[in-house]
Length: 230
Image 1 (cartoon, rainbow, N blue to C red):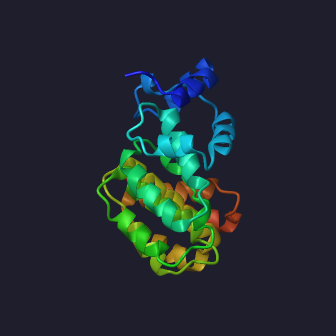
Image 2 (cartoon, rainbow, N blue to C red; image 1 turned 60 degrees about the vertical axis):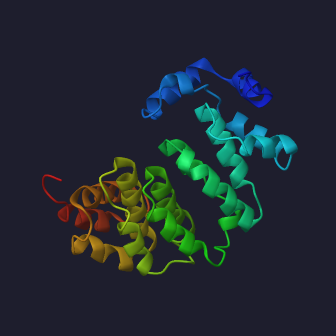
């Protein structure tokens, strides 16, 4: 099957040194699936394609062959203004997300005002059996609900994601470490009561101790909460 014109454009933008660098960052992908297009180039291309028939055709064709195509697809979803359209596109795309980097670039513009029903979608994503769909769900809680939209029950929802998957647990730890910085009074008891799996508990403490948003006093206290042999 002939390569699409858009894939050819991506290939023309590829940087071999960056491809090698990305291969090390995304070890779950075989190097041959990475072209090596830098993110500024992908963002510029997404802006050019936004709203075009070419973009619609590209987004309707799944799965993609290359990591860079998946990243471009994610950026196009981010730019959608309509919440309903965003959800439709995410439902089609998320089952094909196969690495943490593509997952984590997904930050839809239409989610910024936390539309009614979004938390229900988050619950569905976190209940998924797909690793990166679950990671995305926790990431939405982290990115959109730790400030004005925060409710203590969301900590329970994030914790429910914890499982045997490294990339899910890493996102859960990132979420709780950020919650310690932004919603300390609600999050700290989770560590004090050891309510998280041991690995997530310790990784949360590690990330919090590394954060500039956590006070020196809290860092010292968190170190005392670390579990042995986790």
